[in-house]
Length: 344
Image (cartoon, rainbow, N blue to C red):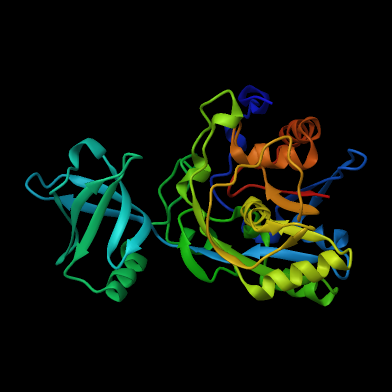
């Protein structure tokens, strides 16, 4: 398949700019791979499709307010500093805007008495900066206080304080992501409790989603696309829970494409997984033989995106493109703050 196979026309008004007031009241499209049936529900109806013994796997990554603003030395120009990842204590890989104004040797003032030195360029056009005059703990506290939520580029508004809560799952624990695992945004603590009471088990992984999730594919030949690497952790407890469920013939239900990517990365022979931590640049696109996942909860993804390619590999390209046209016709809300899809 080629890049152009994953294009579709989306009316701009269907790109959700704000979350719904109630997380689990978003629409839920249920897509059945076996017979191609498509149902229209609300997200809280998802419990009807879950069976005792099913294992839901969630991503406990936590989004941090990665967007900071600084003043550049000498010119006093205002610069955006977008934190990507911490390389070591107080040393960060960042994106700066406008990039042409920020060079090696510049000092950027984030807050009174807090500066970072620009010490290197990155191959992807970013910068490496070192924060000075502040401890690591104090820096994290400052980021939480003055940083803005790193909303996706298709959300055409300024971040609000409320976004720090709503662009975050209710089960987020381990900070490190600059993009939310958006399929998980629909869950409430109450819904998760009802799911557990039904006999459905919940396990967790961590995959820190980076800005690469929004990076467009630019090559028509998909085999030439290279994914950005993202850090992940699969604990021994989660590996054991998944392996036991697979042995008993129970379903593994991934909450989001980040969980799919992580579990398919650590799969080993015999449809089992091994506990592991590291970096993955796994790119899943049709055709692909899934080894671990039996169902996916996901949102509606951008045209020509790697996420759309992944769900197409799982459900079949023709069925997914039909489902997307059905979603457009029924005025589903798209992308991060949008509605959900359950692929069975």
